[in-house]
Image (cartoon, rainbow, N blue to C red; front, side):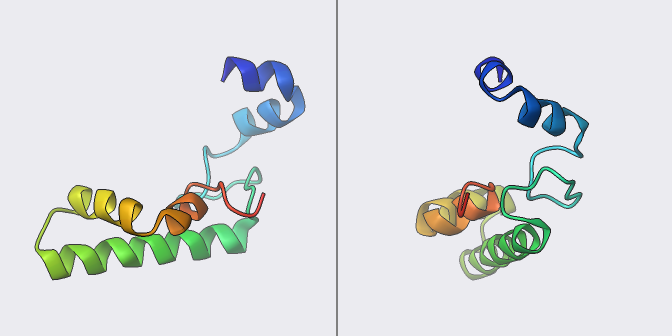
Length: 84
């Protein structure tokens, strides 16, 4: 964060005022994917996690790990790293 604060002071200031890192339930104005794409990415990743948990009988945390490994591009979009 220290590097981001120095390299991108305006973006860092906006991030500090936002609801937090996107894309989560409270999507603020600092959303690299845009609010609609952030919601879509969140819904897709969450759906994959639920499907994995249901099919394998594992916990949600274990399913998140598996989903991240099985669908890396979907996870990156969920984290807000895709389509920047």
